[in-house]
Image (cartoon, rainbow, N blue to C red; front, side, top):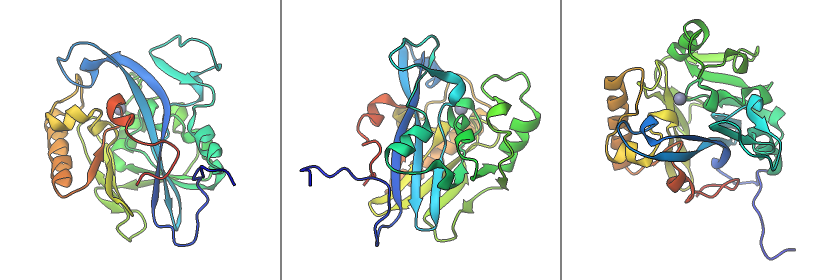
Length: 260
Ligand SMILES: [Zn+2]
């Protein structure tokens, strides 16, 4: 037996709800895209999560999809950067998870850097706020951040309105965090190590929440601020709030192993 045992996904008896984080590409953007008025550039990770629940495997977001893959070792040609091997299906296979076994995908919203990998999970049901679904399927013809071919794939959709407890046991509670898009949502995960809130783009950077800063553009600024206030109140109650695109925060989170 090697000195270092690398935890992988197969469950052991007694395991509770386990959360795994993955980097699924990067976007190189002006910081102002995330924090209005802020100078400079940022190389922001695109993140996705696996929630290993006793009742099945759940993803929160799927990162960038196959249309952006560049061959390993080549230089990025776009502000969107996804190297071969970094897609969410490959991340899961690397820890022994078969993408065909994923039962649910909770999408924070249907932008291409959050739902781009949905195609890798043919047996999953997509959990989305109804208002996001309606927007993404009927109202985004001119908006390139929505790529309908990435999420109109024949997978069943569970369209929810408001808060939804996925398994009815309080371990995965989805709740609306509107503002970035019309039907944006977040999820509170009860792990053995405490509550973790996965935020999608209602909190892209840690500073978004710490300083109550809006992004350069959003669907509804008032709703966005209300969402930040909600995250702040969860944080005061002891939850750890995970921003979705923060390189400094993300560097502190172990990848592909259970987050304690
Ligand atoms: Zn977005």
